Length: 585
Image (cartoon, helix red, strand yellow):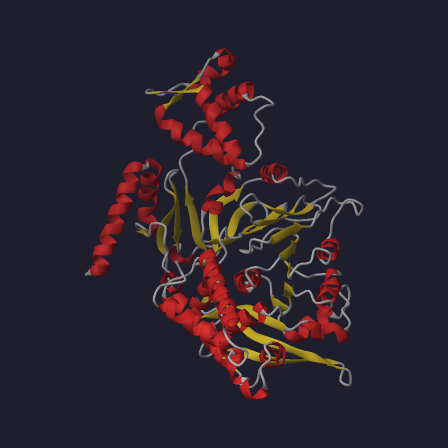
């Protein structure tokens, strides 16, 4: 009964929107006969839809502009086998109207109208459009006005065309043109244009989809890429056909320009980056890893251990790294070093550095250069977006001199990670590998036909055995693919908890059980935060910072005899207060 009422409400909402937006009504009439009227979900898509065999759903990404997304399974599966992603946008105004407005804008925009960012560009365009356009109640013959555009004081715009004119003017002049609908969609992970033809995406709920957006000719695609690269400050050319850059929203883009290096024509790939990173509690609730792994990493990072998050491309390495950074001491000074900006650090004392590729060795700034500079900045933690080359050796030298390092790395196992680290171009000596304390191995796996991310193992690096020439490591946590659960080796098995953290805390062998009690308490705190629905990245960090302050304050109050139990007692108090709804406000 409740489900039927909900469906009726959703259908009523879609009818209301169709009355408000004529382009949506026309689209629904056209598509209804082919695949039926879609189920409307507003802005929130339930994750249960991931298991749906056939799709016919619609949601909104910008209600003010009237941008809707329709995802459906084509009848018979379609020719390509892809499920379809249609961006339902307002209808484009007549070309002649655009020509009139562009001509008039060119005459009123001056050298003083320089925008520092896209938002300011939007404001300038709207202000200038208000100066040169006049809304009128009757249809206008725009073609007849073209020959005398310079004599017009203001361009008459038919009322029914005005809203759409504003949308396309801002989309093409201050946005990213054809890509604007998918860039507004919070559910998109990757955007891929392999050349002329359709653009493809990876959707967080529905996986790979073929979009309705497409480039018809090489000339159209090249023109778009040239304008896009110029807008982001890294112009491509035949002399410099490959560009890596960051879009205004923080997303990463890779461009390969020209048919001489890309045989199917220019192509680009965009990796979306969330404005607010996913939190540890969100990842635990999705079972990327469990609360005990989160608690374990919390303890390691609080004590300044170095680690890599490693896995294949698109395994969720950067997402996990971003999430666990919140575990670092809230008063730490953190230096991040990246090729393109992806990391988000919630700590106030954060130095963010990016490489600079000018094409010239004299003026370029590499990760190697920035890592060397970071060693002189007295950081408490150095975080490297991705270690690929000679900067890896500097990272290990930083660890050896007492600077903890976190990084992502491309390797699907600890063995492959060691092989890559000790081979050209990184060339880390095997005897230095024990400076790395832990390695998280992560992968994208299929569960019930749905692609999900899972931490396959969390490994402690024990040291280097010169006799066998191998690196010794122990998988402290492993993922069981049958049960989709994580296994802990148990009390008394963690080298890092006992020999690194326990010794640092001054715990005797007899009292080493306290370190495992602390692990369980921190895991219960993570679970309590999830039960309290503390999922926002910054709210999680603030809660962790309050817990840390509580443990520091408690440790200062207790006597020397009580000191070994101080952290556990403080965490018990923190857990109780979180369960009462405190510490998380």
